[in-house]
Structures are given as C-alpha cells and as structure tokens.
Length: 69
Image (cartoon, rainbow, N blue to C red; front, side, top):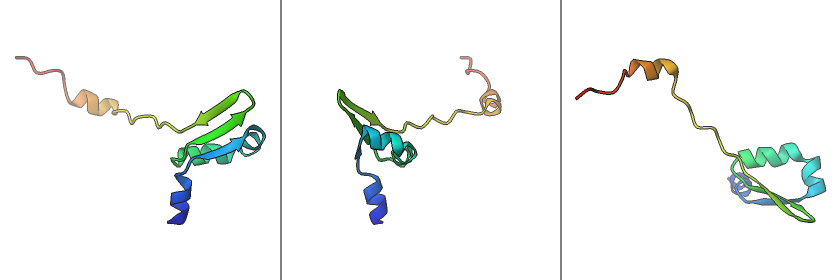
C-alpha cells in the first residue's frame, strides 16, 4: 500500500537525471504520478493522458440512424 501512495506523489527530476531515467519518468507518469523535469530556463511537466476508448464500427452501425419523428 505504501508503494501505491508513493507512486501518486509528484516527483521532480533534474534534466540530466530525467534524461538518464526517462523510462522511469514515463512509467511513473503513466501510473498516475505527475513528473517534473527541471531545466535552467524552467521545467517540463509530464503526465499521462489516456486515449479515450473508441466505439467499434460494428456497434456504431448496429445502432442504426437517428429516429425519425
């Protein structure tokens, strides 16, 4: 349980460390923990945004068209 709590906290990386550990940065972001990579000019905020599930074409076509009134 403690690991799941730690995974949800934002983590800040230096640019060099973030570059070296990019897979970990991306995996943590995908697990729901926003990541920040600090640079001399600012910072990068990394978070994962899932693609919404699309309706299958067969299901869409099976519903038919709009009801006529």
